[in-house]
Image 1 (tube, helix red, strand yellow):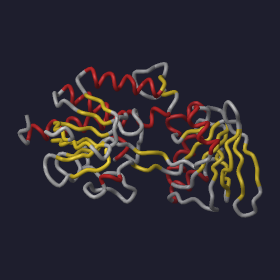
Image 2: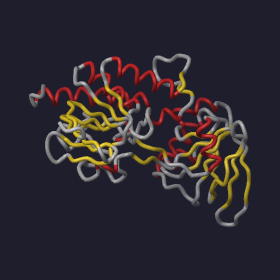
Image 3: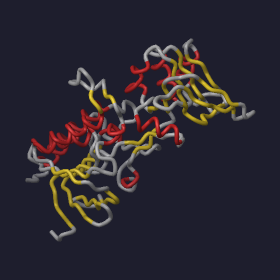
Image 4: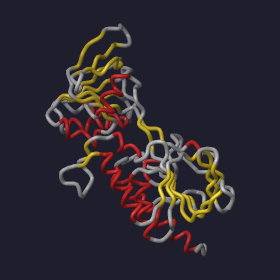
Length: 316
């Protein structure tokens, strides 16, 4: 191989719970996996503070610390972890070719795509400040709702995910303000009915968020009526953004079958894609659950599927 081309049995693209779990299983099966971390090593969990719902951590754990442990476990079994970003792929022939940082080519007998998804944000400076500080802004009600038990919170969004998250929060929080830019929800009729029949969800129609308030922690949100410009403050301690996710899959679109949102389609019950030897795990292919534990489970599936593929095709 030339200095700029390298051959591996198993290339894993992405370093969240799915990627590192795939690496643990692949390394223990002697596939000698190589991980390229992507721009955000550790994935979405590195921007999460307290993780309380991952099994095995009865007292909770900080997201970055958890991902450090994932990496150490993968490396313990021989995974090589490198910082780098996959910038293009060629899945037209075997071995598969993946270009890293536009300069280095990896030829891989199997590729496990674990590139994840990124939450969409409003883009407010105050929103990002509190999100990065872990002080009251989040994009995951299931992950963080329990921290706001008995409190008043606001949620922005009008689709099915927003309706589902608002309903989830209503079981934990005293009050949920649902901020919707229009005068109706985009959510399905069934989800709308559920929201409207929940007494502690208050709809805030025709409104957009101007600023997330508070210094050390969120203590309110400033909103504006889009019709008359009238502003008001909602006194809340938590702000949930539920306007969707973008799967990080654009470099695969010419090769891999995806749905209209860009989530990779896998053969049901497996991690296999339409390209033999290419597998997809974690949030890049899961728009339903989007949890660290389900991502890790699918990472295990990806490694087992890759191992079987190599065995069936006589790779040694």
